[in-house]
Length: 430
Image 1 (tube, rainbow, N blue to C red):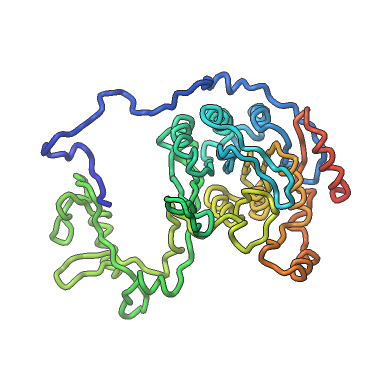
Image 2 (cartoon, rainbow, N blue to C red; image 1 turned 180 degrees about the vertical axis):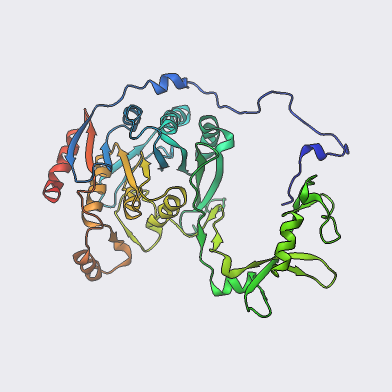
C-alpha cells in the first residue's frame, strides 16, 4: 500500500473533502447506556478470603467482576498499577458452555445493547486500574468485535488503539452452507497512553527464510545482508532534505538519516552503491533479533484444535498465545489481570513468566479448573492419545506450581457451590 503524505501537500487537482466538525470521534448510542460517573461509583464488593497461600500478591477471586473491579479502585496497591490486562469475555453467542466432563461452565446469553453495556462498564473500571504505561487486549469473535471496537475507542481513546489482531482459531472447516469457512477471531490491542511497555515480539529466523530475504554476502566479512532504501516518504526542510554525495532525495522523499550520519555509515561500508550510483542501506542478518510479529497470527489455534495439553474447560485459549502477549506488554514482576479468567491460562502463563496476577470469574467450574490446574497441571487431549498412554502421562504429571502461590477469595455472597469446590481441594491446599 502506498504511504500517504500530509494533506498540506495536496496540489489542488480534484476536490479535497474535509470535515468541518471540531471532533471526528464516533460514539455508539443505545438504550441503557450509563454515564461514566455512575459506573465509577459502582458499589464495591466485600470479599472474603477463603484460603491464603504463601504468596499474597496473586489473587484468585470468585464473584461478579464488576463490583470486584470497583473494590480494586479503592486499593492503592492495584489501582493504576496493573501493567497488562487480557480478557476473553463472553462473545454474545446466546449459548451455554460445558466442560469436557459435561459440567456447566458458563452461560453466554447477553445480546445487543445489554451486552455492549456489560462490556463497557467493565472496560471503564479496567481503564482506571491500568497503569499509565499499561496495555489491554480484548479477545472476541466477529459477532460483536466491530461494535466493541467503537466502545474501546470511546473508553481508551482512538489514539491509543494499537492493533486489530486476526488470529486463526481452528482448523479449516468443511461447511455445506454458502459461506467461507469461519476460522478466525480477533484481539483488540489498546494502551492507556502513548508511552507503554513494549517488548517487540519476533520469530526466530529459519535458514530457508533468511536465505530468501538476506540474499547478498558481503565480500571480506562473509556477512549476509539485504538492501533497503535510505530515503522515506515526505519532504523535509531540515538536514535530511539537503544534498548528500552530490544528490538530493528523490522527489517527495527525504533521507532517513542526516548527511553526516550517512557519511559515517558509508565510511563503515554500510552503504551499497549500485553500478549506476544508486545508494542503498545494508541490513545485516546477524544484527536482527528475528522476524517482527505482524497482526495476523496463524500459529496459536485454540487448545482444542491442537494436540497440546488442556484443562478441558470450554473456550480454553492456547498458552503460547498468552505467552506472546504477556512477554510483549509486561516485564517480570509486573501485575497482570484477567477478569474473565476461565481455565486460568493467563494466570498459569503469568506465573511461569514471573509476573504477579489477578484472576476473577463467576463460574464455580472455572474456579475449580484453576485450582486443579495449579495443583496437577494440564493433561493431554484424550482424543489424541491412547488410554494407556494417557494414564502414563497422568501418572507422571507433576504440579506446574505449588497451589500456595495465591490467595483464594470470594465476594460476600458466594454460592454454596464454591464450598463444594473447596471441600474437594482443601486436602491439596493443606
